[in-house]
Amino acid sequence: MSEFLARLQRQIARASGVTAVALSGLWRHRHLPRNASRAECAEWLHRTCARAMRALDMQMHIEGPLPTRGLIVSNHLSYLDIMVFSSALPCVFVSKAEVEAWPIFGRYARWAGSVFVQRHDRADAARANLSIGDALRDGVPVVLFPEGTTTDGQRILRFHSTMLQPAIDTDAPITPCAISYELEDGDAAREACWWGDMTLLPHMLNLMGKKVIRVRIVFGNPVPASGDRKQLSALLHEKVLRLHDRLRAPAVTA
Image: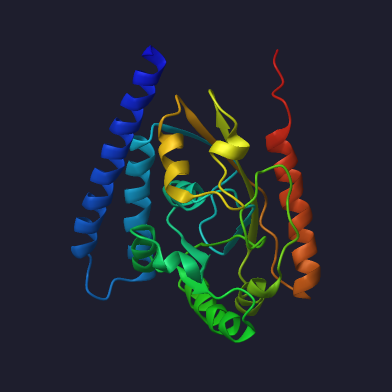
């Protein structure tokens, strides 16, 4: 019973904290310049997500140098990924079009300058690539999840190469990256990762009751964006896979 009450207390405190952060973020966005740049919007989201991380008592550990420009390619595990990456550095995201319709999440993503793309629609992908290229030219890091969907973190799916073209066209560096979650009192593959046919709200409420949510991000060395995008995609997949294996390796103790 005591554990149930402690869990309920965490859920209430975190839900209240995140709601307060969301409302504060909306208020702060209203005070941005009317024609705010991508960099200003990315900075707004960065500060808001950092507050949300604290409200959720999430612990983040980052390895490797933070990219300051170019494309960032990573595996994709959860709706949490956007908050985590944005709290780590100001950036914009390439996201599936469905996210734009999500309550609160969609509005935040739109205001932060996310590039929305219709999956399996070549014409829309071409339009999205133009927007990605503009963001890269503006010098704002762009986060891409080339798997195209979330997973349970046990594997890395094949990469789709279409969205790599803007980096080639703008000669922007591409930084491979991997992310993982850990729970002290649960199964991260099912309770932190969000994939398959999982329902969003029950998943979020359950996660808010966990004792500690840990996230690790490891950034690799930048790769020049050049040559054939399919070959570049294969190279990046290999590098992200190695970083992913590094995160999954058991810790070495003295």
